[in-house]
Image 1 (cartoon, rainbow, N blue to C red):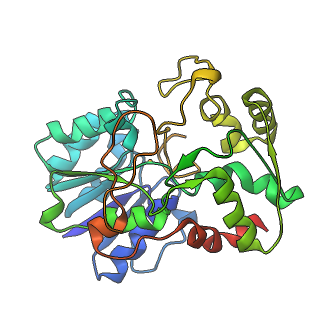
Image 2 (image 1 turned 90 degrees about the vertical axis):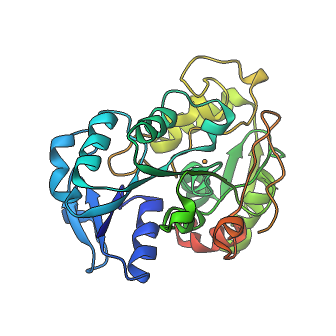
Length: 310
């Protein structure tokens, strides 16, 4: 029986596909653009879109497990098709914002649809994606060796997308019915993260700490993912999109998506992680807690992405 990875060309999805291929699994990839997938030759690539359930039956035939990215449109129909095709378990790449209670409209409905289906499920709920800093900071680092940010001493526990994939690729029965709140192995400030990037590229970076209004305008002008998410990132809107006051915002658990939008998706060791947000108390785990393997540090993440910052 096969494993179907939806969002197989995204930051996490590519790593999941790689893990499963290495493990000798029969892997299928779902993508809207199969011609541009550039996946290992062992992978059967299917054209499909989670927002268009009618495109999915060929990819679902003979699948026992499906990795599901948070696409709320038509989710009940997609899950029903999976069940009809004989899928036994769905792994949802979700967000720790669900655990925090911030997310009731995006990842949470997808989780609920999967649980209602009666299929086995596993929810992987990352907190802060390390790769988000790539889409926020890399353009100005590459152009002028500069980072613009607010509250440089804000702490967080950024997690490497490869760690998320290590957890998402676990397919044995021990993980059925589990929701994992996944964090990186270290508590780091934004200042620490910027220093790690500077060390990776071997050059100093100019750091400008500014007020939220200035940061929002800077990243709106930058374009791309940063512009699309600037209001949320700097406290001008909450998780649901409602207007907020940045002077009262907390760094919280954001609308995590692993950087750029996934294919078919819109734009979150040892002991549980220290709580780095004022509310609420989240039982963080690292990759080590779940897989037994080493959790990757942010410095490792920066070295892995050094070419993206040069």
